[in-house]
Amino acid sequence: MVDPGPAWPVASAAGCRIRLADGRELVDGMSSWWCAIHGYNHPALNEAVADQLGRMAHVMFGGLTHEPAMALGRRLIDIVPAGLDRVFFCDSGSVAVEVAIKMALQYWFAQGQPRKARLLTLRGGYHGDTFGAMAVCDPVNGMHERFTPVLARHLFAPRPRSRFGGPLQPGDLDEFTALLGAHAQELAAVILEPIVQGAGGMWFYCAEYLAGVAALCREHDVLLIADEIATGFGRTGRLFACEHAGISPDILCLGKALTGGYLTLAATLTSGRVARGISADGGPLMHGPTFMANPLACAVAARSIDLLIEGPWQARVAAIEAQLRAELGPLSAHPAVAEVRVLGAIGVVQTRQPVPVEPLQRHFVGAGAWIRPFGHLVYLMPPFVISPGELSLLTRAVASGLDTLT
Ligand code: PMP
Image (cartoon, rainbow, N blue to C red; front, side):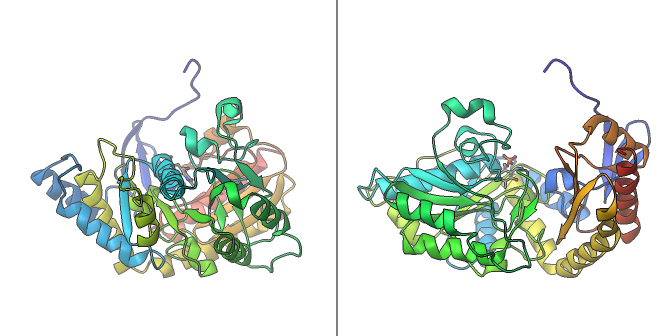
């Protein structure tokens, strides 16, 4: 608001390249906060928006409906984990989380259980910037600490210690189990990011832990909300991260890559059982944003899903994963580095000290790379269509950037 850091004017973007106004080109390592999975200025996505624009840019979604929303809803129901066949479209990831929380609360309230009004989540999580979402972000590292006095008071279990790909460590689920058992009567839902905790620390955890959480939620009659806003649409090597654990949540939040990074749109899905429960008292779900199911966004989202499903996304993500392991892996021996971890099209270098964001970012831009580090993390989440040469430019920039820290 008063002293903005450096910002590089962008003239255009195409494929995995961001062209600056001064003519320089940067290889994109961020997918614009993880959403531009097909790269920029994609002909098929451009065409989907232009076609829809010729029909209508927007129309209210109360009492009216339209083919782009219906087509997108059908596609989502086909690809998400089983049992989720009710779709609510909203504006952004944070709002999708608000809607998920409302669904869970209304479900219990409509059945005469007003005490079930709290949430249980994991430390290290991140769910967005609006007030309901902030209240379930990590209470210390979640970037929202200053709002703590006015946030709803929820319950936090420790971040899982058990790592992705490894076994569930003895005792890792104990505290979660104890909290759920002790508070089930006042818990509406558990909310978590399946497998990958993103903005809260880029942490990859054990699929068995997630399966354990899902089983415990069922046992204690507490709903499970999976926030796949960051993980959805292939980023972790599965279409949805829940698939790593073979689970289906009661409520699923999608956003970011839903539109291939073209327009803001999110979706909250649930089952028929939860949907009927929400309306058990005769009322609708109490949410109705102005730009709900915006036709331009729905049209490009449906096209983006088709592009993903019809293309070799699994091979692409697997190739990115292998290259990230080969090229970032050796950096674990670097004196500035605490750990390197890779999962799907996500490569994370955790540093020993917090990184100096501005000088490091200047270094990356000088090296022709768009990489935006934060905290102790320098990470890559490139578009799935990145070439091996472009990805190597990014990993070399990470390596030379780390050299500037020592
Ligand atoms: N949930 C998760 C897991 C996220 O990563 C984010 C965004 N980083 C959000 C919710 C919030 O999404 P948005 O920024 O679109 O509001």
